[in-house]
Image 1 (spheres, rainbow, N blue to C red):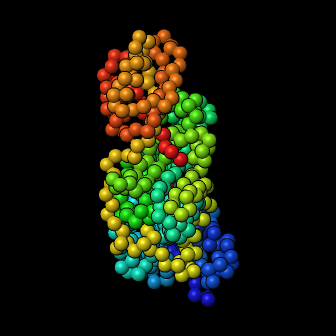
Image 2: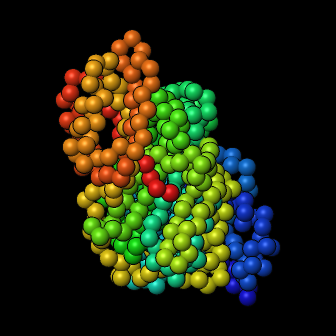
Image 3: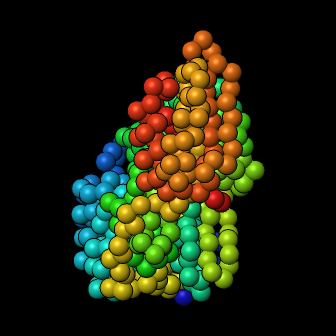
Amino acid sequence: MTTPLRLGIAGLGTVGTGVVRIVRQKADLLAIRAGRPVTIAAVSARNRDRDRGVNLSDYVWEDDPVALARRADVDVFVELMGGSDGPAKAATEAAIAAGKDVVTANKAMLAHHGQALALAAEAAGRVIRFEAAVAGGIPVIKALTEGLAGNEITRVMGVMNGTCNYILTRMQATGQGYNALFEEADKLGYLEADPNLDVGGIDAGHKLALLAAIAFGCQVDFASVALEGIQNITLEDIRHAADMGYRIKLLGVAQMTGRGLEQRMSPCLVPDTSALGQLEGGTNMVVLEGDQVEQIVLRGPGAGMGPTASAVMADVMDIARGARLPTFGQPATSLRRCQTASSATPAPYYLRLSLLDKPGALAKVATLLGEAGISIDRMRQYRHDAVTAPVLIVTHMTTRDALDTALGGIGRLDVLSGKPVALRIETV
Ligand code: HSE
């Protein structure tokens, strides 16, 4: 009962500091729940002198995270440094080689090296847990790996980058453009050190690839995620989509199709009345669909000290209690190399065109859509300004290939001003 579980924490930024706080402040509660004390043996970070507002004097300080990972008095290496390669990966590999379990919040490292790390850990009889890597405080890895273990997962979907959702919902609420709200997000400290990880959809793409691996028993394959960021979303589209009853979200979708595994992270329209449509600010939402459970929706904070440290502690407590789950919910040797679907599942699309005021302009557009086999569900034309009129079209279900064929033809007409915008409407 009294053998403590001893942590070695590498990385004392927001999340690492939050973990230290929980271990210190909730020591009794954790010990009762785990049936053994959870303690910190040693810590490591780049800057020893920074005041982090927590007392670190009880712990051995290691400058080198690899040395920390190898310490004999560390049972679990808690990797909170970040970065797909470099010290995080080196220290994680060292920890596994030294017979330690690993808890990490590092989505980039696992998205790129998850299969190799999982194989190494399982061959050594160790576990790697990563609840904090996906959707911050939402226990989505547990939900998928444990709660839905009796389901065949049919689709995983969600808003998994709070910064993007913050920017998009603030555009809608304030009428300010993308650039102004990017700066606002920056001032609030929401952006990653490399903002392209957020607004380019990469951070959310990493998370989706990890969920897809668990959901579909595939080797994690981030390179196959079709990625598109939010940088080109305009206020006009936010407003026009709202007029048609939609919200624009950076939405991740993973599903297994007859053509292979489809993984997309891109701006999509969702109905404004749906749970995803109503998700405001920096909050995350993950929708899990299984053949038995149908659909469950998880909503919560996707970042921040408390929520992310909470997720790290969920993994620490699992290990303290003796749970030995494989990294991706099944032995890494049994994960398949899944074929990538070469095109997205058909969907309705939203089109915005700026049409010149010429007789027959609209008819020509409709003809080209018809010739590509695309049926129009709804259409709205606004008044002309001096020269052009915005036209919004919602299509029935179609393929992206058919749409691109039609858009190619429409682009060659002499009735357009600027480039048409085409966004997928996701059925949620
Ligand atoms: N930068 C992420 C977000 C949190 O904005 O949701 C860490 O993945």
